Length: 296
Image 1: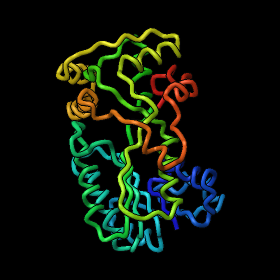
Image 2: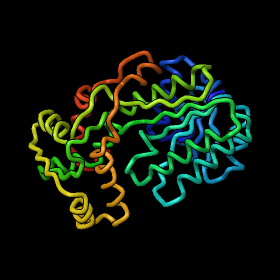
Image 3: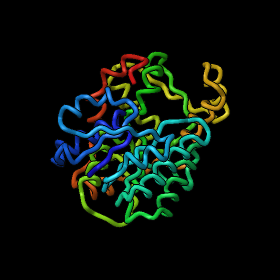
């Protein structure tokens, strides 16, 4: 039995789709875990089992993971200090108690050296997996989603300016659907062992290069303005963001400037047998979304 946590989210749903269509896993061999079962009615209709999966309740998770062979822990989105790591540790401990054979976890690139403020959540989850009494695990260090750009670029296109402290640091953006395909490939296989893969896109891009591509695709001018990190933080606070969130977002730029999001597609191809989609292809499919500020 295969279990996908966070199954009602974008990555979870895409992973379920790849399990069913790309890897032809029978629906009755798949369990989708969620706190919102109504959102998975379409998968239930296909024969996928639906179980409750509340990462805040280790005992309940242990029951939910009963009989599971391969488990995907999709990292949670909580930004409250200490909460996400506690949720992840609940899931790892529950998997151990339930006798899950292989755990797959969605991490981030270079969590041991990353300047991103939530990197310790991922690093300590990886350490917990390594220490757990389970037969095997696979860590998928997912690079920045192409979709992350939908949170900031629509607004930047409206004003015509984008502020960054990333300098000439490059990011190997990869589409969420490709990351789902990679996760599904590990879930659908019977490969054991303890492995770590960094999943990155086909090419690396600076902020200026991304801006030029998006500007050309949308026909809207977009000027990149390079600022110091402190200036970026103050600008976000001035725009209404709480200081903690401003510092969190600024840490993304610091990490990029330090080369923390560079990468190559080798690991993705090793897992899936294909090349990841290019950023340009992703942009063509999503260019219309950039027209609306709240597109994400």
